[in-house]
Image (cartoon, rainbow, N blue to C red):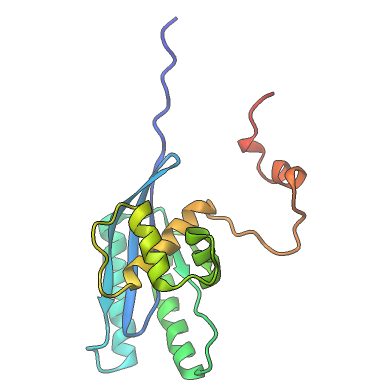
Length: 192
């Protein structure tokens, strides 16, 4: 009998999005088995567009273009945080919705994460600053130089959070512990 061939790790691409109405961050990571690496990240500048409707159109076009270029397996978005300005939050929610629609139009599954969950997943501190998140990503993804605008690194953090949670969000009220883990993850248990 010959040597048993090792299966190559399945590759997948995750697109992370940090929604915004003036600057929207995006970040793409490549997953190979348990390893991850940076593909690309950046920002979509929207301040120059005069109306909110035009900004939404540009978000849809740019996110669709990124999806068509990289063909991600999933899209992870940061949920809008609750602020005092209702109008700003509504606009942010629309921007997020348009980005979601771009992914759904290409039949790509979407997952939403709270800002606190993203920060906790990447830095271990749910109250970390944008700068702390960016510094941790610099190390984790071998980023040589951080950009001035950290919306792109925020988007990378969302993508990495999605990878760390394997696309599943732990909901409240579930029983914790090994028993529930084993029941929920039978494919992760190796024969004893």
